[in-house]
Length: 313
Ligand code: MN
Image 1 (cartoon, helix red, strand yellow):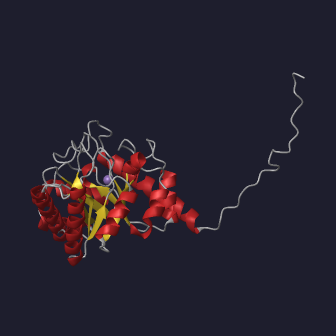
Image 2: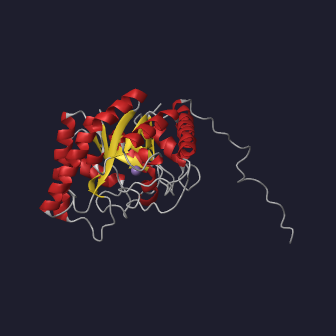
Image 3: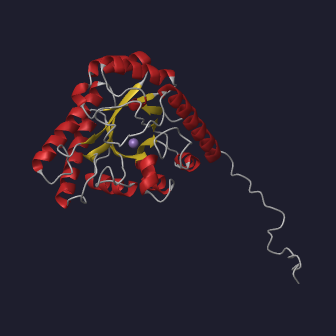
């Protein structure tokens, strides 16, 4: 069974000591193994306290973030790149400080609506910055995940194919694809081909509904998602992401265009999602590992059936 995770924004908008304690306790109570902590403001995270709270509850902590337009390793402006690399270094320090082994998200770009395509010099800066991040992450046993996000949130990596090309050019073994089905729903042809393309480079998965609310109430084809993950033998984390105006992060909610209340009770949402994902994965994995299903062949294929006489003559 894959480790199941949940994004902290289901519980709390910030990361004060009290918010950290409530979020980690709720993560355990809802039956999850992993909490994903947004590290957009690394300085706001008390790593020593967070590490202790995670240990108390037996929960694994991972971090995600997107960069900013004025601190962006995919910029052609060297000063902006320097600030982007500093932000990534701070986020990596949070991951290692809480005892985590994973840093993912739009670590390659601002999480923003760009008004032009990725600049070629910016792309070179991005590759160099990711290479440095990956090497320093490797020193701490941390894996770096590149999460393709939709075109309204980055101009650099929108598809799994984009991510694989960047991983190839970065050339470091601890860089993986972080697939998010909410973004894939916008940018990919289907939910199977990106999983097949990523292969054993797939290292982390976000499940979220098309409107970012309750799983199963939107247009994502979850049987296809879970079927693809099972067929690929994917054993990594599957983390539930959902956002509502009911829980607001000053850093993240506006950037993700979370304008609506999709839900108000995070625990109800989380318990539902936990069951939805566990059941969906278990069903798909049983099907993938079981004997081939017997195809039910209907008696006669219809092609030779006598057509009734045309009643109109
Ligand atoms: Mn995501």
